[in-house]
Length: 239
Length: 269
Image 1 (cartoon, rainbow over the protein chains, first blue to last red):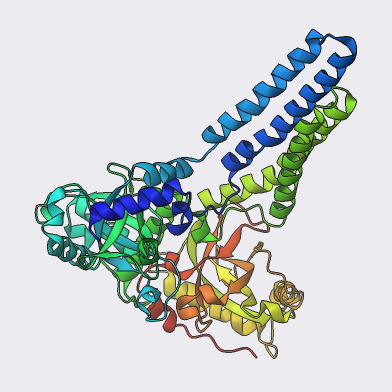
Image 2 (cartoon, rainbow over the protein chains, first blue to last red):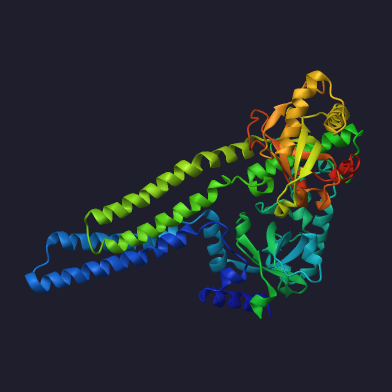
């Protein structure tokens, strides 16, 4: 399957509402946006009850008091407001994840480093790691370059950071301390053999990642440094 | 990284008598804490959760949501006291939650933002009575809240070892240290692990403190409690409970496994 076809498949999954789970994007915290959005339904039930009460009263009095009508409008506004507010009561991370699923590009990613357990033959867990993503269209013709750059970045973690240029030292330090998730770092072109728009991304790796030309398949937002702005796609997503 | 602490060598092993390596290790530890703070990765230092009240807070939040949902339905039935009563109780839930969870959360955050990582030596440890806590040990750990420079590192460990010998069952304790040694023994017997610290008598070492802590064995190097050397995250300005904890060994830095191996722990029981 080529990258464009994979992109189409991911868009279909997003339309079906299944992509979030398949990308391993889950919230540890209470999803307040969803809760506020769901509260609109009791609000609409309240509106329905109010309309029913007004209708009943009107059959007797042949009139609807303005106060009742105004209350009905207020309830409807509250319910509609909750439905709208649910979209805005989201953390930046939740918003980035949503943008990623809707506007993310499917790009190849080279493994730079991963938790040791990732390489266990029986591993069945999502584990943290670092991948190198390139948005350069040329990478499609040079996948082996990306893989090679990924390996050379891994070697940088053992470098003496006092001897490196500051931007290289930042990359070496990120790989060395292994803590995450940390924001993605732009990798300078002198380290990428000419590939442009490369990002070192802190990502969760699925136990069986989807592969393209021996590289991981990654959904990523160009220019987004949040760790939520990229996700490695699992093989079973494309099954 | 504004401090430049991250600009160091890639450590593979650190010897206790190698001042340069120790200096690099301590700088690396500070840089790792900077990463935690810069990106608010507080789960790496045990989290900034308010502790036991967190569940109560969550329950109150859920109660508030449920009450609002009921209130929205009731709003279609009445605009009377029942409706406003429900919303008042929902608001009260949030207020109680803020009062219960707010201060401990602030305290935990404050700790995560201020605490420093310092070497500690386990001078005595005992298992917890509860078998479900077999992954923890209750320990008395000597620490230097002001930090220990590479030159003073050996002296610090030696002072801790003196204290360890005083805590041995058959130790003869001089009179002016009996009260301190007795209080440490009582703390261990009562399995106190709340992170509070007490000053160590100057006769043992100047500027040192003793912390009562739980040692989380899976978070130690190689997941084994085989070394008496640990690294403790503590707030130097606060000695109260909750102001010291042993954090996972990723924060201790690379090359620390070999350093710990130089200070093996003698199994107490």
